[in-house]
Every structure is written in C-alpha cells, then in structure tokens.
Image (cartoon, rainbow, N blue to C red):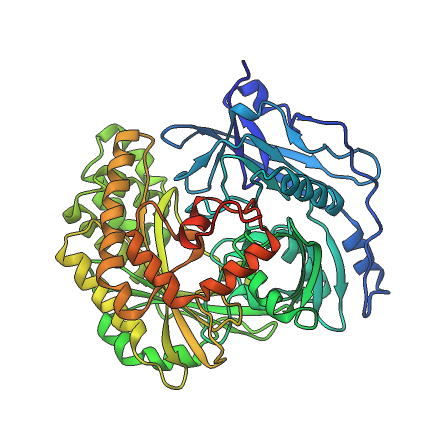
Length: 591
C-alpha cells in the first residue's frame, strides 16, 4: 500500500506526512517521457538588449514552501522548505504522471477543499500538454487544469484528472517597444513581476496575493482595486488555448476576437491556457496612506476619494464605527512620504489587542503574548471564542484601536503595496455589483455596505474584521463579474470572511456552519437588491440556494453563448467539474 501523499499547490511539491519524504526534494514521477532541451526564448521590439535575452532564456530558481496537509480536518501538520535549481541544459525534467495516484490528496490554500484525483500530470512543454488533452478527449476522460489552488472554493479541483502547469513557467518574449510580455501560463505573478522589474515593466494591477499562476489569475477574472483599472483579464492581449476538439488555437482581438474575449475568463472549461500575452505598464512607485474614518465621514467623502485616488480600499470593521481607508497613488522617484504629526510605537499600537488577550491567558503564557504581532494577536483572540458575537465585537473594537494608532504612509513598488495579509485559513464570500460610473456613482457601493452591516448586526453574526471593499472598472470579457460594454461603468467588490483558526475538526465544522448562515444571509437579503454575483473563485455551489444561484447566473452572463462555445471546443465535456456543471449545465456527452 502506498503512503498517503499531500500536495501543496502553492509550491507544486508532492509531500507526505513522513519526515523522510519531506526532505527528499523532487517529486517521484512515472512514465518514460523526458522533456526536450528548452528552445531558445525570443524577444522582439528592442530585444537586442542582452539583459532581456538573458532574462527570458533563464529558468527561474524556485524556493518552494510545501505544506504537509492532514486530511479530514484539512489541518496543516507541518511545513518544509525545498529549494531546487532548474537548469535547462543539464537535467532532464520529470515526465508526466504521479505515482501512487490513488493516495494523492490535494488541498487548497484555505484548507477548505481537497480532492483525490485518480490521474495527476505535470507537462513540461506545450507539446506534452497538447498530447494530454488530445488523449483525454479521445478517451472521454475528465481533465482539469489547476494553478496554485488558491481559489477558496477549489474551482480547479477534480476527482478524476488534473494537470498542473508548474513546469511551464517561462517568459517567452519581452517586447520593450509595446510593453507586452508573452509568458507560459504556469508562471507565478510575483516571479513574473520580479523578472520584469529590471526592464522597467510591471503589471497594471494586483490581487491581494501574488502566488497565483498567470493562467489561474486570468481565468477567474481576478482583480485588484482602482475604479479606473479593470480586472486582470483585460491585461490579456493574446493567448494560446489547447482545446479538446479543435486543437491549439491562437487568439487575440485580431484573431477570433469573440472567442478570445470569452476564453479570457473561461473558468478552465473552454481549453487549457498554454501561454498569454500581457499588456504591461512602466514600473512605478506608490505612496500608500492608511487611516481610519468614521462611517459618517466615509459617506460624506466617498465620491471624492473614489475619483481622486488611483487605488482605494476600505476595510469595514463590524460592530464599530471604524472604516480603515487605504489609498495608493503614484509618487515620483526620490520623493519622501509626508511626516506624521504623531506616531505610536509597535507596543502602543497592539496594546488594546494585547490587553484583551491578557484577560484570557494564564500567567505562564503572558510572555508569549508580548512577542505576538497584531495578526497573531487577532488570530489568537478570535480562536478563543470564534462563534461568540459579543466576544468578536470586543475583538473588532480592539482591532479598530490598533488601526487608529497605525495611521501612516509608506512608499514602495506597486506589487509591494497593493497586496495585503489575508490572514490564515478561512471561509470567504466575495461579490461584485455595478455602482454607476466615476462621474455618476449610483451609491450602490455604500448602500450595499449599509444593508450588509445592518443585517449581520441584527442577526448577531460573529463577523470578524475586515469586510473588504474594492472597486474596478469594467471588463469586455463576457464571463467577468465586472462585464460591461460601457467602459465608464465601475463595479464594487465586497468580501466577507470567517477564520478557521484551529485544527479541531469539531470547531472547524461549527465555524463552517456559522459562515454558511452568514453567507446565506447576504445571498438572500442583500445580493438580489444590488444585482450582485459571486467572484468565480469564491462561489460555493454546495452552500448556495440552487435556484437563486441559477437565476443570478442567467441574469448576468450569456449562458447560451458560453454553452455553445463549450460544446464546440469540448463536446465530450471533459474540462469541467461539479462547480462549472452546476452553474453552466450541459449534457455530459454531446458527441
């Protein structure tokens, strides 16, 4: 019998709970194929620059952080750090299929979903990927593509066949004249940005974390914040799509534009994205300002703030009159940030949270409390009584005081500042809805928050901080939650959360049940009024009211058009899983 394996898809490493296995390094893979020597990467535009040629020809040096998962509760039992240097010329790459497939367990980043795929592949070249898709199509076998498994709902997971593009991670072309870069879909956002920075380029915007693969990043219409900036799929100007029925397609606004826009946010159901061409922007530094406003002040100044800031984010703190406001705007090189009239030491900033925790810890643990960061204090506080609304209210009040003492400025590159700490394992629901234009905001964004706060407080939901609110402009991709043909339209994105700060399976189950009620409250009472739809990576079909979900999908998206394209490109329906089939049902066999 094989020992059970867990795979961390943040790093793509095959792990088991045994410490010996955790230190062996590379995966054990079966099969006879080896990767051919990497073809020379090309550059265009001003690509005679030798630095550009060196950057695109080099394979990345990866530092993998592997999480060894304990199945069942989804708890994390240990962590191991792997380092592997990937040199093209000297070592053959591991071939396709993982051994011990019956015992392979994959966990998503949130620890909320797992799967046990019967087949798991890691192609190293586009040719290998084409072969896998062709073979699965011929046999009628399910085959889904997974990136970093960051989606809280396990959108990429399948119990049958999975393909990881971890080994397809090269920069293929940098065009300095057009500011465009062509990359394989398996490259991670942060690694791409690190490689682009020496050439004066970066991505237009970023989501809260940067461990996504580019393929997954665009397929779910990930987004950052900025009412004048669209979701990330709008950065895609070209792509290569490997389809079951029509083979390899090269798509852009010049080559089949209708299919191109549909495939940019295809949920992995139209084909496997082999590479994408992204429109980049010049590297820039941002001045970030973080401060706390009252709800009344937010209502009074919101429209001005939304129009005058390149990036704006609110973090609403339930059961308080505090809204954390974070703005980011471009600042010239060498300009220093403004000086604060008053600043607090770190001890003073975390003082209210530390004092609250001291009420509940024995004397022998107080020294440990003094060493905790504010996020560690929050996690420990919530874990004490996660389902007690009165206690969570006190925790939120202490956190609001922390933020009031943390007002300040900082300067950094856009990729350094636009992300933020999402906390530990968690349940989350994020929705998107229209709120007019920058010049004529309908007020839906603040109306949504007012209704949501009133509903959760009336129901005494143990809602921790934050409820995050962001904005984007529209997307031309039909399946983007922010889709609109009017380029002036803006959309607000709101995310609620509950943390799974324990390994105790019973407590985790109770938190899961509590969050389900919280999410269902929002889905039933708030979302219909504002025509809100779920972020694709945060849509839990097993929790949602099926009929209400079906109605939301049909009202928002061109379901018939999407289904027709699926039946054309994937007539045997091999690329889907239960989530895609629940929201876009078709016959399992149409050919």
